[in-house]
Image 1: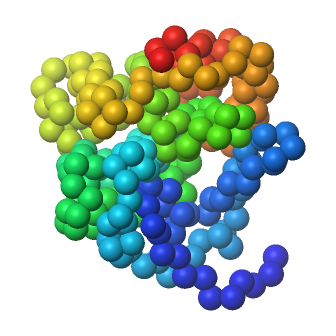
Image 2 (image 1 turned 180 degrees about the vertical axis):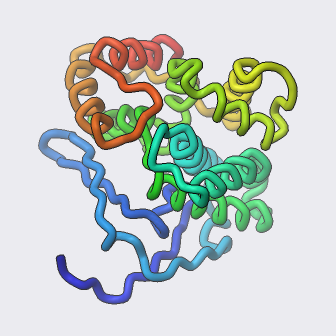
Amino acid sequence: MKKLPPFIAVPTTSGTGSETTIAAVITDDETHHKYAVMDLQLVPKYAVLDPEMTRGLPPKITAATGMDALTHAVEAYVCWTYNTKESLQCAEEATVAIFKYLERAYQNGDDMEARTEMLIASFKAGFAFTRAGVGNVHAIAHTLGGLYNTPHGLANAVILPIVLEDYGEAVYPRLSRLAELTGVCTSGTQEQKAKAFIKEIRAMNQRMDIPTGFDHIQEKDIPQMITWALKEANPFYPVPVVYDRDRCNKVIHRIIDEA
């Protein structure tokens, strides 16, 4: 409710998109609960996208933050409402760029074209999810960050293909479009193209040494994880599939089983 001083954001990773979003995250050290906070005052007045600020980013963090940006773009794209023409376009452009440039930045941190394009992609993905929202991937990832300090981008990278597979036919039309735009799969049914797109996300993770699951999740924590995830996602996120406790439990156990 108060006017902020001039707010200029200079991102040092190509992932969060914080330089264009209404989102911030706070972790309660006592409860280990990671809260998403939304406020229009959090949108910076200016954003400076300088690839030199990301030149020294280690490959591991480059990969995780890049997949965070991809999660922003994809979750915004498959939301069932809130989409605008601009958010859909930004999500598409961000996804295409990340598929093209993330692994280049991962393999060669001095590739300034890749670093620049990843900063722009992260910005566009942030723009998209500020308007369209995120989903169950983020809701579950936040519980891992709070309870186990799992890096957010890494959590998103691991959870994204699992949740997209769980969504099934609800996201086939949108994912098939992304498969076409990225060149992953340009022929076949919507289901075939959507599954090819998810398969390529898994392949990208593998090539960048990102795990397929997490074995540090403790069974005793799962009820709390489900409570937090459902409270965050429902009704605030316009997810294509609304989870209940049983379905969320199934997805979390898949994350464990695929480790």
